[in-house]
Image 1: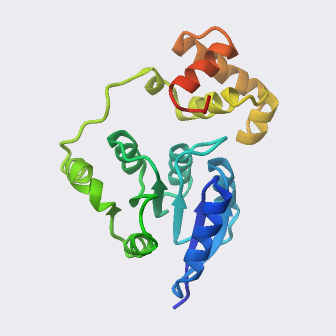
Image 2: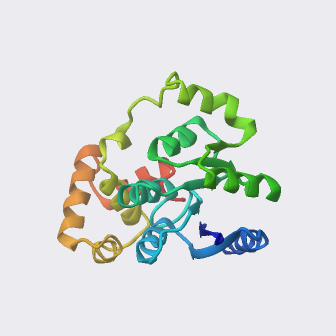
Length: 219
């Protein structure tokens, strides 16, 4: 039986390299590919001849964040097994990730042994979540008793509009955004106009400030 193939996605080069070394140290696992942001992850996965057995995904990344990448991956590759590896332990992040289709949620303060255990559990078809946050979140989620946050302005945006918002706020031109998302510059402009109308924003400066306040991009 061959080794299980893992794709590692994290914008921190040092951490990503460490994760790859950890995976290679396990005789049952191998690294199929690496990516340093969500957009590269989606493109890398679609370019692989054989889908990986598991995707190890960070959440806070430039160009396309992890949650957006997860949604796009699950849309195009619905059978994917995704294990989120992140610093975020809030209900909102955890619930949104499971709602998007991840199979596991692991915090970055986990030990190497814990992370490898999480990887093998997800590969075996089980759901994993850090013991420290399992009681607080997962039980309520699985029982359908946990509710997500109240709807906000961000919730009025489509997934594509959120992707355009992040890229525009990061300073990319409409042409560059169009290249990243494989759409036309005219379509980007239409999305940007829709975003501003929905959020009652009037220029790129206000759009950028909104994105910073929402934590979509760094200050």
